[in-house]
Length: 427
Image (cartoon, rainbow, N blue to C red; front, side, top):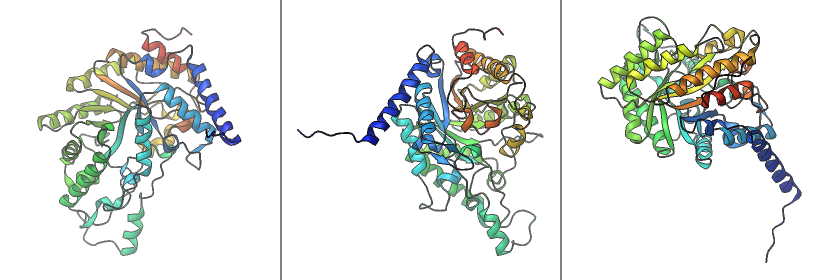
C-alpha cells in the first residue's frame, strides 16, 4: 500500500484552514447566519472582488489584503451568503478590453463564476451595458460628433482613446468611472453590432450558471426632465439601445433573469422616471424581468416609511425587485446624498464618521430590512455591495455589517432581529 504523507507546509496550511473554519462556526453557533435568517424571504448575497474569487492576496493602492485576510473573507462569504455578484470582472472594460473576438479576458470572470458554482450560490452578472467602464474602442468609428467640423489630430485622438481603457479590478473602483471620448464615432449599426457581439459572447459563455444579469445599468438621468442620462449609447444608437440590449441578452440565454439596475430610486423624482421607463419597455414587450434597486443610502435616510413607500411604488410595475448593491454610508460627507456616481464618491466619504455611528448604522439597517421583509412577495434578493468595511468602495464610511476583520458589528444583530420580526434592541 502506498502511503501519502503531508509535508510540514501542507500540515500548517491545513491547520490554518481548520482554525478559520472553527472560528466561523464558533461565531455563528449562537446566532443565525444571514442566509438562514432570511431563507423564507429572499436570497442574501454580497459583491465579491477578484481576491476573494481567486483566493489570492493583493498588495496595491486599491486593495491590500494578506492571504490570511483573504481566507477569512472567503470563510465569511461561505458562512453568511447564498448569492454573489462581481464588483468588476464582468464589466466591459475588464472582460472585453480590446476589439474583436480575441479581445476578451475571461480568466477573472471565469474564476468568479466558478467560485459561485462551487459554493452553490445564486450567481449574478454585472453588467452588460453601462456608460462607465466601457473602453473607448467600443464607440470609435469614422463619424464626427454632431457640431464638429474637423477630426482631432492623430496625437489628440490617440491620447483620448487611451482614456478609461486600463480599469483595475479592485476595491476603490468597484462602482465604475468612464473616461471621456471625443473622437470620431461608430455609426448606429456599428455600435449595435458591437453590443450584440459582446452580449451574445459573454452571456452565452455563462449560460445556465449566471442566473440574473444587470443588462443595462444607470441609464436614468439624475436631474432635469429627461428620463435618460446623456451617454454615447444614447447619442449614437438612440433611446432604443436599452430595448436592444435586453433583446440580445434574451437571445443569448432565454432562461436568464434580466434586470434593469439603477441607484437613487429612494428619490421620488428618479423613481417616477424609472416607472415611466419600465412601463414604456413593457408596452414594447421588451423582456425586462426584474428591477434592480442599488440602495446606496446613508444612516440619515431613508427611513423605514420612505423605503416602504419606494418599494410600494416600484411594485406597481409587477416585477420582482432585487436590492442589488446595498450599503449604508456612515461618513459625514455622505449624509445629504443618495447618489452612487463614482465621481462624487470621494466627497461622500469625507469628514469622518457621524456621531454614534454604530448605533445609527444599526438603526438604519433595521429599518431597511423591516421594509424588505414587509415586501418579500416582491423583494427576491438583497445583495450587499462588498463583504466587509475594508473592501468596500466606501471604506471610510464603514457601510457594511462586518468590520475590516470580518467581525459582526451591531448592525448585524439588528438585521438578524429584523428577520425574526423583532424591534431593535432598546438603547
